[in-house]
Image (cartoon, rainbow, N blue to C red; front, side, top):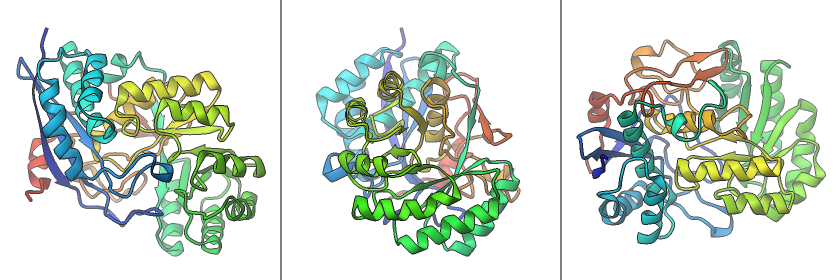
Length: 386
């Protein structure tokens, strides 16, 4: 039985296609931490911590985790504790990681992704098979519009719709008038054949402000309203007052959070991450709670590079509850970029081949491990040496 021999980290920075920000974010996307697991036979698996210091749960329940913090946690605590663990024994991996240090889910997820990748390569199986099988073979994509000028958004969404992506998410939560104008403009640009959703990232100060703003947007047909305010009990207040379904994101990190959301009937939708619960193993627990509670889900993330985004795709393929279009990149190296913008947030990527976008969705890779190899030359090119 092969075992984990070593774990190391590399910091990378991908060039962005355009600025992509949301309410509360103060740093650039794409400066993320890669992890590399080597097993006792010399096989290599890759993972990623898309850690952002500004990203955390409600009322300090969870906290920002920068790449520097994630690297320290991995190198000082996680890596030494996992040497010798059998490949495929993810229950033991998580028990050891949780015993050696509390919290730090992004660091734990990054190590675990690499362990799933190398285990799949050992067994000759794609990661979604290690998660229980493939519930779907194509992951529909939602394209995200960050906090950019309305005119710029109008041009981009029109192209996204022409490229065949059928759902667009609009970042809001800054100013009610601006937000309403943005939704009106985007709806006019894409027509009625594209679904629109909005994400305030807890940006509205009160449930009342959120309710009034969303009601003004509802004539433009919203698929859902994501995290309008901070707090499970406060998003429940919004959910009771508007027609569009509410999605919990910052309020939904763990399976226990999902139980609380269900008990309080706070949201009809939960956004599952591979990272917030601490990895794929625990993300499947969140998905199982949601399925039992009748809560539908999508898979969302922090605009990962292709390395971390592959974990998103395999989770979305395996989790039966993840029936909604997913807010994931269409990870595409520079050689395959021909001016397309749908799902493209970076000018280059770290995988050797692009994710295949067909009819608005990504075909799930079926190769061993994460299914697409890491481009070592690109990793070298974009490594940050600080």
